[in-house]
Length: 209
Image (cartoon, helix red, strand yellow):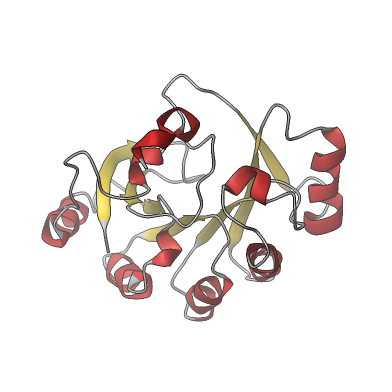
């Protein structure tokens, strides 16, 4: 696992849990509004944390923390994610995964093997071809079917889950939000996040990539 950084404590990222957040390097999307653009790939002298450092941190916090959030970047691009989840769960932690839903095969494996306790998926916009690419910055012809499959896997997983969308001016309107909820999720299943720019976004850093 390529862990970039650790947020030592969060009371909002894992509902009902005192948790830490592990941020992974790498992402297969290039969302222009991304606040974690520095995680897309290692750069500017930032290197991965040593695995021993990460595991020692988790061991030391076992008596205070209930859960571990794996975020990114996009964690599911890492093939050894299941092995890492096994190690974390063996320490007694509940595990929450933040994902963009682009890797349904990984999600299905994690669910089938009881390796994840909470799934949070960012739905960028209405999952139809021609719409998704406006947000994710890469062609969406192969992505949309994966997004739809991931939605189904998560809804049928039997684990706690949350779908969320960041409201983007010029991209979203009430009709699109209704389409996401009613056509793909079911009424009342979508959390709307506010778009903010105070910490910088990928669109302002694009020349670095």
